[in-house]
Image (cartoon, rainbow, N blue to C red; front, side, top):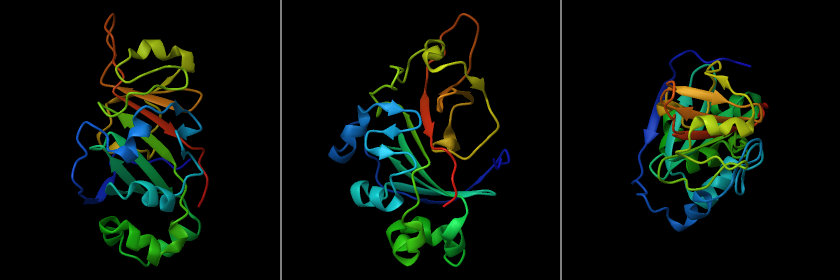
Length: 210
């Protein structure tokens, strides 16, 4: 697996008006959907749902281009409390996008995939949820705000695994607990005899090239 350096470049940010605390109709179903490691969130399916499909259903939201020794297009909704990352991991999209301005791609993602159709089929690689937007739970019942100690139902976690590119990474809480089933939970810190509320949850697809 390619590892990222400790810093990464947030090359472009195309702002869209914030969604506020009440999800718009097109997002409401995801606010209460089950977050399932290895599968996704509702009909947002890891490794299956494509960039073009999300653009058609939800629009571009707030787009960020993440780049280091890898690159990816992150679509943020509900003030960033729902983030969807589509990674470019080699293959025809990687080759085709080199002749297209990446800043221009983030400014108008629909125009980008029209001009570079090889990237329209980029599969969803990771999903992060946080904050007031997400009211649902994982497939084992863990919710935003729960104490990290209760998440043992997902297995024994690895704490702060080697960095990788994932949805929500640019402002993720400092401590990451990564579970064997593919779930990651983020908290600010863990102190003896004090609860560590979960602030962000992440599910990631198995890595493939596209």
